Length: 154
Image 1 (tube, rainbow, N blue to C red):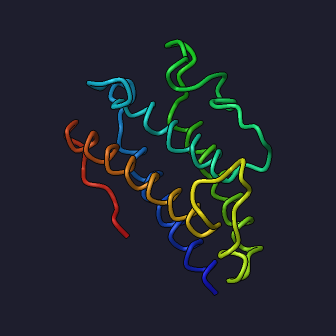
Image 2 (cartoon, rainbow, N blue to C red):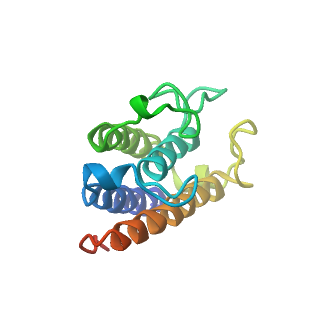
């Protein structure tokens, strides 16, 4: 079934994100050059967006987990890597649960218009995966620029 391929790819993506998050020191976690190009902001953005893409409630409140979006949080409210990893694990479990309930024909159906990011459920899920991997690449580059070891790619 196609949902098994989606599940495997999302599990692979969350594994890659989780791995790179462990590479940053506490000092590196809060350093960067541009507004989103800071490890904690990218990590938070990735997981907040996965939460949004696989949300069960509409409307979605951005940044609800940590009291505001990455662009809103004061320095003393910045989530630490462990809290982002815990959030990522919870969202991965939701992703697996939601995708496990789908049959192949379900993936061709239109997605809920209020949650829509494609013309079908499959297009929505592929977009969510592409978005995650795009920002994983940014996190990986930041990690390498800080001199950390290369992360996983499996």
